[in-house]
Image (cartoon, rainbow, N blue to C red; front, side):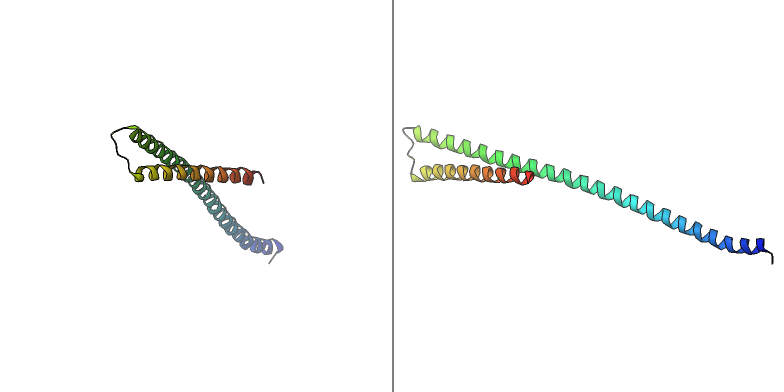
Length: 121
């Protein structure tokens, strides 16, 4: 056997093995890119759901505040009617609604301050 045949016999298996590894590496790279794309899409969907959840919480709080304001206004209007005989339940309910409203405002203020300073730190 001459030297050219020996070199050729050694290089063909090496070339085939190298080609197989190149294909395998390419498939792994494509799979990694697909996983990264999927992860980014899921992260974006999660961020959007969180934004919607935050908006819903805000609207719920606004709705509770509106209901309390309407309840207070109705109770005060009924108290001013001379023929309406309001018992202690109306006054107790009005006082309770006012207390809850103030507790909610205090809670939201505390949590808002915590949120502001936690983002900074």
